[in-house]
Length: 336
Ligand SMILES: NC(=O)c1ccc[n+]([C@@H]2O[C@H](COP(=O)([O-])OP(=O)(O)OC[C@H]3O[C@@H](n4cnc5c(N)ncnc54)[C@H](O)[C@@H]3O)[C@@H](O)[C@H]2O)c1
Image (cartoon, rainbow, N blue to C red; front, side, top):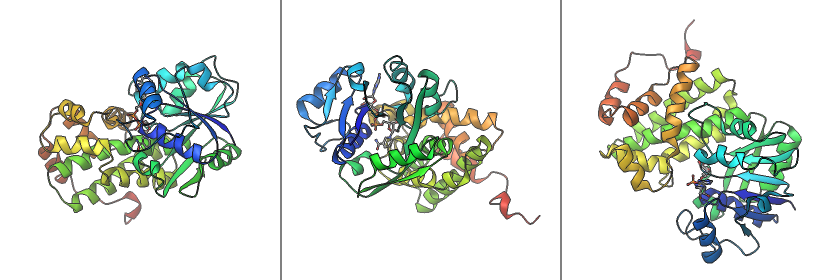
């Protein structure tokens, strides 16, 4: 049994807290938002982000960050990615050396192009930062539906320790040494999910969706490989796995925002209607900057950026993608 604190009480933070509690750990949930803490204490439920999932009394709800993180075996960082740096910065001076922190948020910091584990390491020194990711909608994990994820850590011992902490008979956890690959897959799939949603909003069909998923993972893997990630990771649970679930599911806020844009709404109108942080919008800019930095062609991600930030019409962007220069499917299947 471990002492675990989950920082961030959105859908994913709560689903993981309930999972960890069911696994027999001592669990605390913390949120920076007073309103959220009040709701969790009074209603025992986050009615906005994860309605219907009741927080058991055995989970402690804590508003004081120092109290929440002192003497914990594992800290799970589950705030929305745009608050990862700020939240990690608040941990300075509160943690023991070697503290295990598991990042479960998905994103790339726009201003620095850092992954979120790099952001955390930049803010808090002498900690062990790991990652947990995969095709795992909170709504389904909260209900105990069978789900698989992968945990990435710098040492095998640490990965095995975390595998034991998170794994249950409905939540299967694999281990990996490729933290970078896991994080890139999780962040970049949100941008492709926006495109998949736009295609749905335009009433395009399953062929279009399959094309976006397949060519999307090609783009993600080209960039990932250029950055040093492993191909197997990009074609694993946290890469293609997460891309499939995000492009197919109505639980995905990125896809839902994309649908609204495909139906003619502006980015701002779509974000307002979804009522949640649409992380793909932030990751889109970062992905484009990374593609330029590593000189990797990413046509779908470029098109999403043009739609989001240059007022490009969605249909025109699709037409241009379809009419790009003829190409071989993959450099590995050339005749040379
Ligand atoms: N929801 C899912 O199914 C799911 C699954 C896997 C991973 N994730 C990732 O987990 C992260 C959290 O997602 P989510 O769906 O729980 O909710 P979210 O992205 O909507 O995050 C909301 C939470 O962030 C925290 N937050 C908001 N403003 C803050 C601030 N100013 N300072 C500190 N914390 C603040 C609050 O606790 C809030 O509940 C995201 O990066 C997401 O991509 C989500």
